[in-house]
Image 1 (tube, one colour):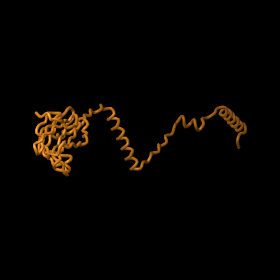
Image 2: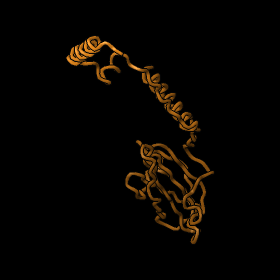
Image 3: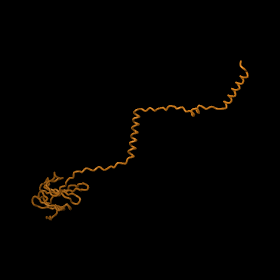
Image 4: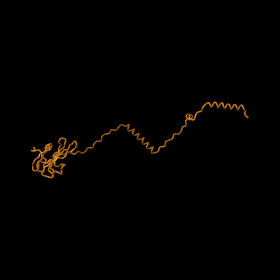
Length: 199
């Protein structure tokens, strides 16, 4: 059948080839991948539509804030205060008076004017409960603090009827009663002067 020496030669050749190939090491699986990497598909993230909208809004807000921070600060001007109507203060003698003690006095006339940094008010007439008793009421208003002093009441030295202011030469207020009696009131000392230094 077969020649025996040929078979032996073939067998020896195979052993020699096997021995040569055993001395060399082939590449491992990891090295094969490094040499020839196989591209794997990247998984795509799935975002819910509401989350995507919120993310887009957040990114837009961040861009707007960054833009605003890069711009110069706007100049803020103070809001002008509206012009309030000013009340005209009537000074001098008058028969139209804002009497703080109207219910307790039968008024005849009044006077007001600036004395120093205050506005002085004087109201005269007769006491409501006793019309024979002349009376003078006075108070002041501090124009800086808009504070009003209490109303002070002073009755005439005699019961000569209601009094009327005839002249004012600060600090003196000159009055005349219904029966013709004259009284002078001093706004500084808050007293009736006697005898009255009538002008």
